Image 1 (cartoon, each protein chain N blue to C red):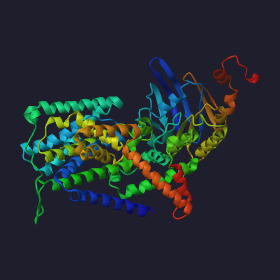
Image 2 (image 1 turned 180 degrees about the vertical axis):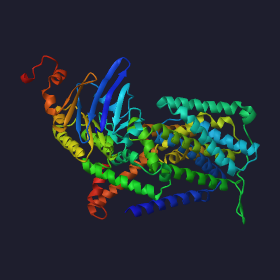
Image 3 (image 1 turned 60 degrees about the vertical axis):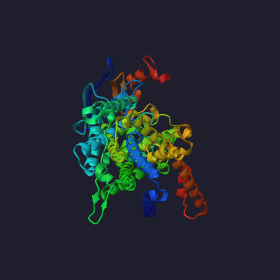
Image 4 (image 1 turned 60 degrees about the horizontal axis):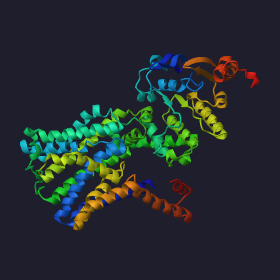
Length: 345
Length: 258
């Protein structure tokens, strides 16, 4: 039973990845590819927020600023020092993680609304730095001509990243990495500790979970994801300016996480699909796009306050357990245990 | 040697003295009752032992270790677990998940190995799950393991709290009003459970207002009032003691008349 379930999980993963890899071929078109790349980057950014908000229960509004740090560090190293993307990407991710680690120390002493305010302040400060440290960031003029990732030479052939399709596979690889890391966190002691802190910090402490330690870990992981997203964004768009990394970016990430379901590994992906792809699909009626966006938001918040992912999950488990009940009556695979489990849920 | 020793423990909140120069000992294998009128400082004593509050003065000694200044999250690895008043549990988790979360302090594999899905981590997880199921059987909640903890009836939530404490395999268990809100049948069952917990070699320190339960289950009782210990003794001695009757019913009350 467990073996079969394990194999099924693997098959599901492989099918999902294969589908994602084939997506540009199925859908085609440069514009679709652009949307897919941007979506992947947003999912990575939102996944960072999901770790700190969905799992640890802390509302961070500094996500946009951390996104910017990743973008600026990578862009500056590439443009001013001419370093290869394959060096700047890990460096930018590490630098953002480090910043999160250092800032986390004082910031994570606050909680609830105060944490939200402090991180909002952090986002604003970072955005002001991007705007005003003209000697380094060139201020509102932004940094242009950011190089595409250096081609990888495999001997017989080399993979260049100047086309959208190769860049899509690059961000897809990054996205899969981020998803796997999040999935592992969610499934293991670390995730359980984070959820315990979200549920009840004092109770978590009673059982040996030291909240400050785990909050720092969560904030560092959150920052690393944001930095990675920023770096991928910078080398894709090839031009960055402060306005992409302001408070609005933080709010967008927040909306994605909330709509998709905070505290679910697939939440940010769902949120991105709904909030980025659906409005884009309605481009033919462009004057109604913002209306559609608003209606989606309103409906989700009113009727699915725990987010879309949660509602879909509940529906799916209802269907599955319904089938289990039927099986139990027919006596195919069901046992008394199954029946009880189904009634309980 | 006593398993737990309080030496002149004092706690003041501003000008209010909640616990004043309190000293008592808990012997290994005891079921010690800590009773007293509302506001006597019983829960504060628990919070001082498990380091949810800092002592203003005095010492708490557990198995020869001075734990007066130990960090709150380290207490459980010394072997002290507790429950909270009003069954404070992880309400949004399933019963089994809550129990597994409470296993945290028993973990021997590092977080990184766990993230990498190492065989050792898997093995440990398996052991923890088996242990959690065993404890759930022990407290009689095995069938509820997949239910959301916060949706259980009140009495069962209280049991989940006890189960979470037990799964950490403590030597000393502090129970803060485990019987509050239970019907007579559930009260009897919980008393029996406390005896069974004691039978596993776990020393129990019990705060409870239900006198029948306290008198029935404890082998020794400490009575507090206004943050001070007024009497200590066996249930029989306590029931007859004039100072106790005084504290509970007021002075000038004739116990035999009631």
